[in-house]
Length: 222
Image: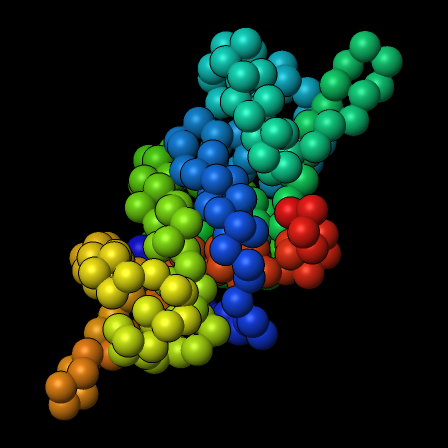
C-alpha cells in the first residue's frame, strides 16, 4: 500500500514539536476504522446529519455521535446548526487529502482507473478502509511523524543527521527507524559505513504534507 507511485510531497521547514504532537493526536483519531468511514462518507456526501451518517456506516447514532464529538474536539470535523438539527462536515486539510491518497492507492492496487482521476470521489470497500486505518495507526505517533517529516524535508539522511534534525536520542531514532522500515514507511541503503534512509511514497508522506498545509493556514492555532 505504501509503494504505489504518487505525486511527490515537498515541505519548506520542520514544524515545532508541539504542533506535530497535536497533529499526531488528530491522526490517531483518524486511525480508527469507524472514524475513517465516517470521515470518508463526509468527504463523499458533504455536510450531513448524524442520522444520515449512522445509516451509511450502519452504526447506532449514539455511537456515531461519540466519534463525531472526539473528531470535532480534534478539529477534524466542524458543525453547522440549522434549527434543531446539527450537520457535520470535514473541517481539516488532512482528512480530505488523505482520501485523495487512499483512492489513488486503491486505483493503483486494483487497476480501477476511475479512482486515479483528480477529484473523483466514491466510497471505498470497507475492508480496504479498515486496512488503511490500521496502516495510519502504525505511524500516528509524534516521534515517528517527526522522523517522517524530517525525511520529507531533507531527503535521504543517515541516522546522525536525523538525530540532529529531530533532537531525539540516537537509540530512540534507531528504534523508530527500524519500526518504520519494517512497516515500509522508510527505505534504506548502505553507503560505506553509513545507512541512509528515505521516506517512501504513500498515505504517511501525504499526511505530512497535509499537516503542513493546515499549519500554513492556522499557524499555532493548529
